[in-house]
Image 1 (tube, rainbow, N blue to C red):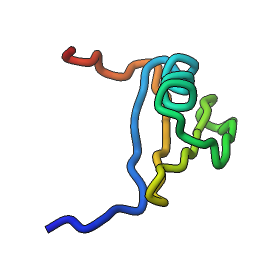
Image 2 (spheres, rainbow, N blue to C red):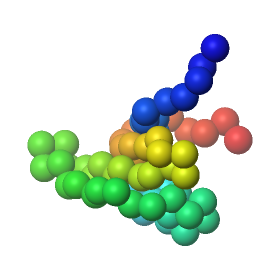
Image 3 (cartoon, one colour):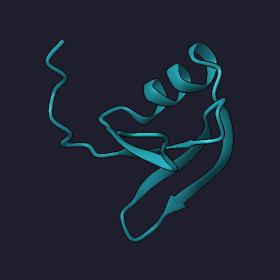
Image 4 (cartoon, rainbow, N blue to C red):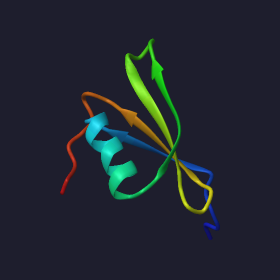
Length: 67
């Protein structure tokens, strides 16, 4: 039985839209935001209310969402 989690990684296609949704709509708190030069992309660490974390990774060729 799953009793908790430390972090979850989420892949997104549009970083700005995903960040706005997570921060403004869901109300998650930004822990850190780093630009990764070698990948030419951002990584966003967000805090969940229970102490867990979400790591947001944008990929320009992310698969489309089914819904």
